[in-house]
Image (cartoon, helix red, strand yellow):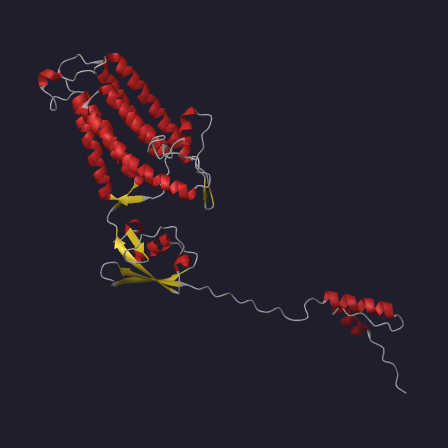
Length: 362
């Protein structure tokens, strides 16, 4: 006969240390409860699988010269989340002579330049992306362009207003009498360009970033040259006042100031227009009466701008101002037509716009 083995005190401690209780065959319910507690407290029966990092697919960007089709460099290990601007920065590290704003990249040789915000993954057909490079030349920021173009006319006009002896005849320039319209014209001219300079610094938001230096030179030549021609005639000692005298001057000056105020409020409204995803919302008229022009034209800022120069022409009654106003009307009408077509494509609620710049006409 075999005797039942009784566990010793040491074995009891070992069982207790491993969390195993003594079996009690006389009570099946208690045994089942103890077994279930053992299973729940034991944790994972299998070892957790080893986590493996998912492989990230990198792209290689091959950059070729747009003229000769020769390979310039290969930008490797480009993450899918990168943008074209990131590629330009890496390209700049390889070729320091071309900084990012000077680099123009195209999918095709004669195709449009790709925007910096374009995702690399959206361009990829395979792991190798081929882009064509064009040197855009020396670039300057839009803020620098506008500050340079509009600071010049402000200072140039003042030089003619004080009648430097090197500009006019010395004897004629010493005459003290000036018609009030000369002083009023200087005030209006300064107000116009001071407004533009302040809006450039604190209101306007430029999306393009940079533009070629040659565009700034062309703009400076246009504005500075016309300002010299305009200021020479208005501030000349032999300048004659308008035909209808003070009535013509005051009405035109009032219209000029109204257009300047309207231009400012329109620019503020355009700077705060809303964007929501791919949707584009055009500003709507508000309680401000200067914004009511939004209901009639696509580019009310251009409408007020040409209104200012037409008023300035009537106020001073000089040929140079008239020629300048005429050229501004042509240029801004072309810009307005281009923006009008863009608004028609992007804005869902744009069916109420009736004209591009001049209500019911253009």
